[in-house]
Image (cartoon, rainbow, N blue to C red; front, side, top):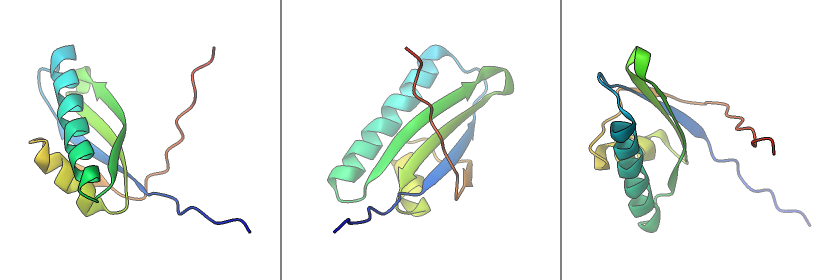
Length: 99
């Protein structure tokens, strides 16, 4: 008997951040990962899958996996980086690097 594993939905968060630097991006990622780890240990699984920064456009995108958009929004609030825009039902394909 094969058991189906439910697919975890993905959500895209956007933040508008003037004056992005490598250091500020690293701080954002560290805070989000810490919040996600804490929430997951509390029984609300959430994972930051990908962060994409576009300094010229002053925007940072975060791709999250969680069972609800509320969990993602809460993780961002805990990280003290409230979501400025949330996109639901995001299809994500993250390619493996070529070796």
